[in-house]
Length: 256
Ligand code: NDP
Image 1 (cartoon, rainbow, N blue to C red):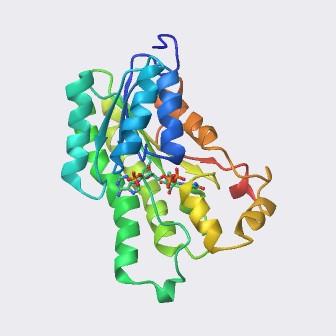
Image 2 (cartoon, protein in one colour):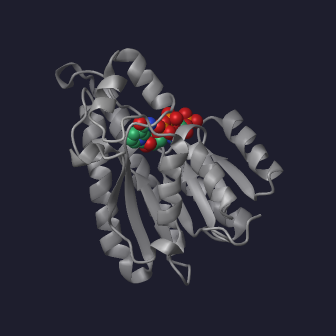
């Protein structure tokens, strides 16, 4: 346990913790002293990562939940409260669906799946998280994962781009509503980052990675930990007067 870390003593819930940015965040948050609750659908991966964190001396728990299902998000927050007594921070990071089909060929069920995961999923988590944080004397801090696709358009990703723009709207609305209750709500907008999600996208769209590097002042794909560090800072008390922002973590992609 790191008692002098950035997140010392905080109880933090992280969705999408079974891989990519969320798994990196689980490691960063735990290293910075947080007690973490890992949330995703793939139980074996959550079990494995929870075991790794505990073996490293952290306090960790997991909750299997599909963020599209409101009751499962409520149960995940309850797991945090039952196991660690409260909830101070949340990283609503689960997401899916970059670069599928051109808009005019997109099926309803693909659109619904992508919007439900990326937008409804954040809402489903925000509701019980805020309800719980309202009982804290010192409020709390929430970070939602948007994307550079929440700030500008990215190719063949219409429902993803729409949902990630809406995540920023939801973030601002929540920040505005709960600032008086000392609950900060921010978003991060990652650029292209090594993960299962982009490996699939790049496999289906040859040349895409090289094209994105050309458009990025730091011409490379980010490591998941680089995104996780930004989320950890926004969840920490060092960001005590930061709320309602959508922070690009994108190697400069969106300044072009
Ligand atoms: P990964 O595919 O590696 O991780 C996605 C995570 O979300 C997994 O842990 C997955 O777990 C979880 N997840 C997906 N759907 C659901 C669901 N319905 N319920 C619960 N959990 C779910 O990709 P990334 O790490 O890259 O993605 C993390 C976030 O970052 C996403 O919101 C993504 O949109 C965003 N992002 C990523 C970028 C990139 O370049 N990688 C760029 C910009 C934004 P499981 O399958 O076990 O449920």
